[in-house]
Image (tube, rainbow, N blue to C red; front, side, top):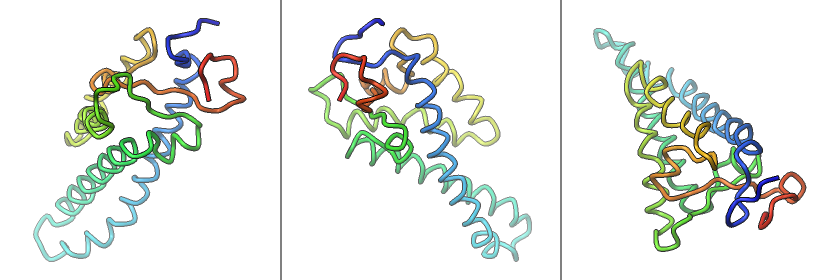
Length: 163
């Protein structure tokens, strides 16, 4: 097996775990968004077209909350709940960058999700880039000078430098 600098786990071992982690985190916030929709909808029922406004508002708040969650948890611990469950974490490749700066740069592409109706499509190249990049780094990793690594002693035992 090819060993990458600094014990970085090869992308073939991480792509699935990264996808599961992202789906878990997005699913968690999607569920929270759905739970808040009736509350927001009730506040807008008297306004003409209020249902549409409520849906847009609930969706925007949910996406913004997710971006904030991703930013803060990555800056503080290098992990979201999904990353903790899949035993992966974000590490800075540039020690001169602060954790907050790297995390902030990583979340910039997440704002593409805020584009109504096209956010998922617009974000595909950002994350799809990880499939083509040699080390499995997405554009968000390149922006933040970060790398997602495996931390499970059993799953990642064959990787030099894995914890």
